[in-house]
Length: 324
Ligand code: TXA
Ligand code: MG
Image (cartoon, rainbow, N blue to C red; front, top):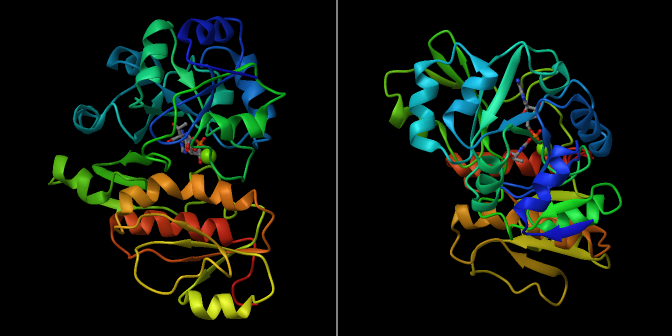
């Protein structure tokens, strides 16, 4: 795999039906031409993703939304005006011409305009939207740097556009429109309150644990190989695992110095949740690569973004029974 900043090179691969690593402000994607069934099949194969998980289409301008979606609600347009380019994905009715592999046959298509200069430059250079899931093998931590994509897929894709570290670091918020309401299926840094600011008279509710095809339905998402333990007290947890190789994911500056008993990473010294979000996956990747016995973390304060971050932690830890 080549790491490059050449949009022309990316275009060449995509026009040939290739799949490339695409930087976005949230996480890197594994991208292909939405109209190319073979490219879409490749994405599912490379990612080892079950076919019933549809893909997000990435666009550079509104006309591209109209080329793939129909009956677009006015609310969607208002939200796009406020949040695009940015980490908001909207589920809209799909044009029937979209390959059903991209939509998992649901009749809907998820769409967003990423806020990343290279991604936008590429998307305005090619005449088709790009479908892209996060560029991690199914169930693994999402990539927030080109090197993460490289280590997952080096022999499997020809190119990753190197757009540096993802500044948001957390997947986009996904919403849908049901009757007159807005439904949040997955929360990223755009919160319910942010949506209500644009649509103050609209009912906005969560449906995070929806079944089957919906985002967030897969319990052990975002999981490191190393067991991840959620604790209320680092002292207690460190004592419990004494003699083991421990990784700590901390926040803030107060408290005990654990650097002699554990590999410590700090998500945000100032306890800024946005900063913590942008570091979470990168630091999980780092700790996961150190062959530790356990990674220990505390829950975030349950504010809007804290709730989204806690959801990622629960999923990352879910394959290990916390009560056992
Ligand atoms: O930030 C992001 O959204 C990143 C970057 C690359 O854009 N993409 C991403 O894609 O997180 P992915 O495929 O890893 O997660 C998208 C989620 C999946 O859980 C999928 O099932 C759901 O969105 N999804 C996609 N299309 C959908 C649809 N039409 N209806 C319901 N859920 C859908
Ligand atoms: Mg994903």
